[in-house]
Structures are given as C-alpha cells and as structure tokens.
Amino acid sequence: MQKLSPAEILSTTFGFPGFRPGQADIVDYILAGRPTLCVMPTGAGKSICYQVPALLLDGLTIVVSPLTALMDDQVAALRANGVAAAAIHSGRDRDANVEDWRRVQSGELRLLYLSPERLMTGRMLAALEGVEPAMFVVDEAHCISKWGASFRPEYEELAFLKTRFPRARLAAFTATADAATRDDIAARLFGEDAEIVVHGFDRPNLTLSVAAKEKWKPQLMEFLETRRGVSGIVYCLSRKSTEEVAGLLRERGFKALPYHAGLAPETRRENQERFMAEEAVVMVATIAFGMGIDKPDIRYVFHLHMPGSMEAYYQEIGRAGRDGKPAEAMMLYGLGDARMRRQFIDQDGEDGDHKRREHKRLDSLLSYCEATRCRRLSLLAYFGESGGEPCGNCDLCLDPPTLIDGTREAQMLFSAIARTGEMFGAAHVIDVLRGADTDKIRARGHETLPTWGVGADRPKPFWQGLVRQCVASGLLEIDIQGFGALKLTPDARVVLKGEQSVEIREIKARASATPKRSKASIAAEADGVDADLLSALKALRRELAAERNVPAYVVFSDATLIDMAHLRPQSLEQMAAVNGVGPKKLETFGSVFLDLLKSQLQLS
Image 1 (tube, one colour):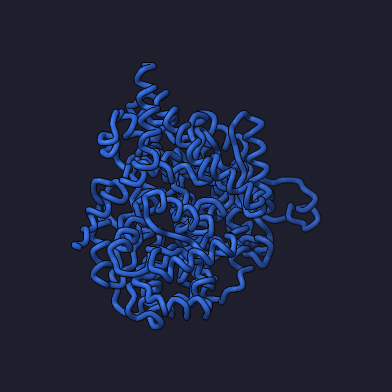
Image 2 (cartoon, rainbow, N blue to C red):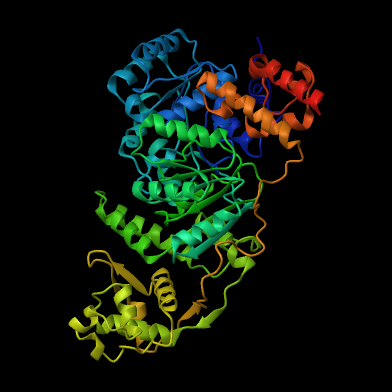
C-alpha cells in the first residue's frame, strides 16, 4: 500500500488544506533523517511539524514534554483526530498506564508522551530498546541548555538519547532561544551538524508598550477598563500578588481567575478550562501558567512585574494574538522589580557562569525597557534579527521620546551616591538630592553634604526615572549584597569627572497606560460573522468538551468555529470543507454541529 504524502496526512487527518509557511521544510528534514532543531514562535504550529512525520514513519514516536497537563491536552487533541496516542505519567491510574504500555508493545500507538524523568530511567530505556522507536521529539528544548533562561537538570540526560538509540530520528522544538542557546542545544542533543531552523521572531500584530511602575492599581485599571469585553492575561511575580490582583479585579466587576502553583491541581485545571472556554476572562497568573495554552483570541498580556529575561518576556507575550489579529503587550517595571530579579539570580544554586549569563539577560531586558527607538526592532535585534523598518505600532513609534542632555542631572545623582558612600538605595539618595528632612538623613548627617537639596527643583518621579535610565544604560549598578544600594560604574565616574556627557529620555508626568493611536483592538475584532451564531457554536463546543473532560480546543479551535460560521455548511460534505474538520472530527462532531447550524438558520 502506497504511503500518503505529508500534505495528504495534513488534510486527511488534521483537516488542514495546506502547511503554514516553513512547516513543510521542517517535516521534510525530519523525514530525511536529519537531526533538526526548530525555533518557532508560540502559535506557529510546532506540533504539526512532528506529528505529521510521526504518522509517516514506521514505528513509535516518543515526545518528551515537561508538563503532565500539556501531555494530556496534546493526547486528547490527537485522539480527537483519530490518532493513536497516549501519555504515561504518575498523574494517571496505574492500570491505564499499563494498558497503554501494552498498546506500545503491540505497535498500536503512534505517539507516546513522556516526561524526561520517566523516559530516562533505566527501566524505561531498556523497555524502549525492545520497541525500537522511530523518533524522539524534545519539546521545550531550551530546558536542556545551561545557556538558556529555563534550564532544567532533568533535561540534561536527554543528551544520551543519540548514543542509546542511534537509529532513531531526533528532533527538538522551542519557542525561544537566542543564538548561544540554539548552538548549545544542538551540540548537547545531536552532537553533530544539525538543521537549525529559526522562524522569524516578528509578531507584527502585537503592540509593544512599557511604562514606569508608579501606582500599579490605577495603571492596571486604566488599561483594563476599555478592555472588559475581551480575554487577557495579567502576569504577576508571586502567588500572593496573583491572589491580590485577581481579588481586586473581581471587586471591579471583571471575570478574573487566579492561577499559580499554590492552588490545588483541580482548581488550576478548572480555572484554565474556564479561561479557554468562556468569553472575556482575565487570567491573573504567575509564570506557572502559559505552557501549551492554545487560546487564539487572547487580546492582551499585561506584565505587572518585570519578567526575568528577554526570552521569558517574548514567550509570555507570545500568548497574545495567536489568531493574527491586533493584540497588546504592556509591561510595568520599576527598580524594585529589577532588584528582586537580581536577588533571584544570586540566590540560584547554579554556578558563577550561569549567574553572569542571567544577569546579562536581565541587563538586556532593562535596556529594552528604557529603549529610545522602536521596541520591535530592539526585540528582534536581541534574537539576532537586525535591520528592518520601525514598526509604527509600539509606544515608542506612536509617541516618540524626546532626547535631552542629562549630564548635569546625572552628575548630581552620581555625586549624591558617591558622597553617601554608595551604601543606599534610590529612595534615600533621591531624598538627599531633594533636600528632604528625614530621620535617616539627620541620623547620618547627610543634610550637611554639598549635594543635599541640589535637585529640589526636580520632582521625585524625575529622579526615579533618571535612576532607572542610568541602571539600564550601565552607568549604575544595584548592589544586591548591599541591600539594593546604588553603585557607580567606571563609566559613571567618567561622567562625574566631566569627561563624558549623558543623553537621556525626557522624563514626563505619567503617561496613559494605553499607547496613543494603537492599532491593537480595544474590543474583540469583528470576524465578519453572526455574533449570536458564533456564540451558540462556542456554547455547543463547551458542552461537548465538558462531557469528554477535555479542553474546548480539542473539539474545535476558534478558527474552525469562525470558518464554520462563515461557510454555514448544511451537509456533512460541506462540513468536511471547514478548515480544521478532519475525518475523525467530522464523524464525531459533524452531525451535532450541523443540527445547530440548521436550527440557527431557521431562527434567522
């Protein structure tokens, strides 16, 4: 029997008429047996790139995934398309795991999802040698690299797969990895030349904005007030702040749900399901939320605290606007966030080289926050994509900053830091500059310093902004061991001597949390379909998903329901032409959705 082509598998199994740009090349590399590392943005369709080859190869494909919930969702989605897949992990009943292993041994399963911890046990590796897997796929592959921002020690042992299973194909996927991380992943996992496929990091539909954190509650509420009708994510740094923010939003009438590692697994799952299935839900979360989230109509991601690196920032904002429509990424940041991030790095048990790399990553994020040119160009340059025109759609393009000579003010600031012994944080140094009369100043005699009161003509927000800019540009350092004291760098001492000038962004009164003339949607983008019909289709999907205890997108994605509302099929043959309706889903769900469409047509 002649095998189907990749395009035929894509159509007959998954119901898609064609590959997205770049997907076909990756499929071809894998089928040709080339070790392949794929760096593709969130939402670009990574799963299809290995699931299609898995159905064409003779033998089992093992997918290494870090989260059990993510495995279960992937398996549910594959089974909904008629693909024999399973996940074996500790969260499942032992009898179910044993039964699925029997299916592996009988050759019935095509894809098996395992955590790295379970895969790399001696018992599992020995058992798999008897099965002879055709391919291993490492998902979230940045976790294998110590150069990466999310290194996980349990991923390290995956480097032994190439020697233990030399005949098996090997592929790896990640959404974020800079050049050093990409090279390290390839060297560790493949140990030879590999195809490294990097898809563009540009997300032109995202409006990128950053604002100095001043009073976070009014800043957050100002942003959210005009976005009540859409779904979004608010990222927080801690479990405590997550609960506080979710409670605040509920008080203000938002449908807000918390998500963090301190919640019971059932609660996290329920909140995630509500976010995926319901309209206008705000998920308030720590970084525990996000991996594997496949909700296309997230209209904004709001960072209430600064992320840990550019990689983390990019991955988190990548959850917005996966349907290609306008979406927004807003971040508040302040020196307190930077100090806390420095502490996290220094308290990490990793070696000195790792800490230095993480500090450099944080430096890059600080520079991004205080950028003076197009944010999109800054973001792309970090990931090695240079050139291009300003986007015209970020806060800096929509409201360009004015650059002024800040040498005199910087010298005042640096002098105050030096004369107080480089032992104090920004708050005390600014009090000295503005001539404040505090117990702390009097106790140390700082009211007698020549710099006491020299900056009284400038408001406190000006000096706070100047400190942030000087930290971001490397003129000042935050001494974590010294409890956040500001330290002068050699470059600052050159400025202090009058041998170098300092150009700064003009520091204005607080700007609105919403960038001017943003192209991003404030309300849901019109899809050109009947809103009542689409709402009815989503309600039916939610009901069917609840009956099967699977995420809503496993039944049909939003894009499929929108296409269905556009086409309004009246027969199974017409339903088969809807994007994302493969044969198995047509058999399982086609008739019930047709009944709904026909009843809605009669009502209209």
